[in-house]
Image (cartoon, rainbow, N blue to C red; front, top):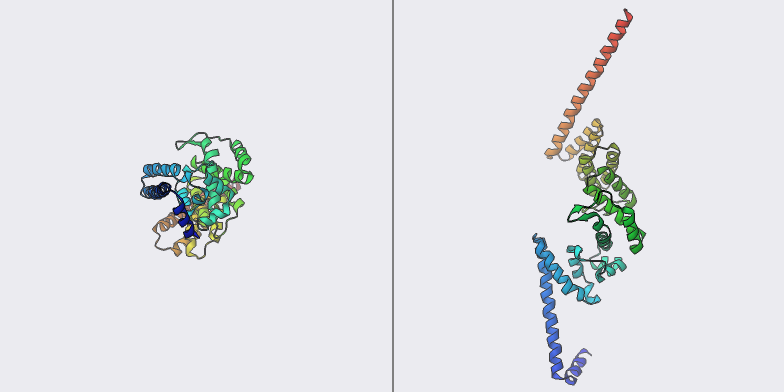
Length: 328
């Protein structure tokens, strides 16, 4: 049938028109190849760290090619490869955003079954436009007292409550971590954990290596930066939860180390030493943990020595007072 159509088209159309169609097809083919090379140049430049050139090339590719494609040509895995690498170029007015917003599951399948990819992309673009513009400018914080309620209302009005709740919570965590308000951040992260119910294979807490490791690494950040005992105790629960997702004792080494350090900071030295000893026994070549254990034992011994000295001194003082009173 296709051959018949070409035959009829060829012999019923003036030669000048056929020449124009062939020329146009050739131009389209050449431009497609040209822009394909431009896209690849942008991706290669980003990988090699030439970010300024990468962004410039990506902008040209998007505005002069991607934005002009029809829907059937636009919604492809290659397009989402580009979007993943240059998400800051995508806006809520773009067709690609609207397609993602309307077809979350379908888009996840287009990018290889990456569950949650599309929703994260949609949230990123919404957050960029309706939250980050009120918080940051040129990488600097604009205010220490954001109007979270106003931002929540705007997102809710345009995209619904679920998006508003998730985006504002995530934005708060990012913001308070950035300004090093660790008490507020710790409280929000704990809220995030309870809201998302992380599991062995989930990646719902915003980390890059799964929720189990995010629980541990965030607890470690709290240990390093926060002295508030309430927040430290919350961090301890995150470590324990993450450790429950480990398959073997060897996988638990870093979690045990984090737990030991938090316990030590909370003043529970005896338990801390026990957990650090277990971590060292599972990874004997880890010099850093060996040094940590030695410091814990040294400081604990010094603490016990001082504590015993105080008790003995107080005991002698009481005894002397009792004897003095008895023989007055």
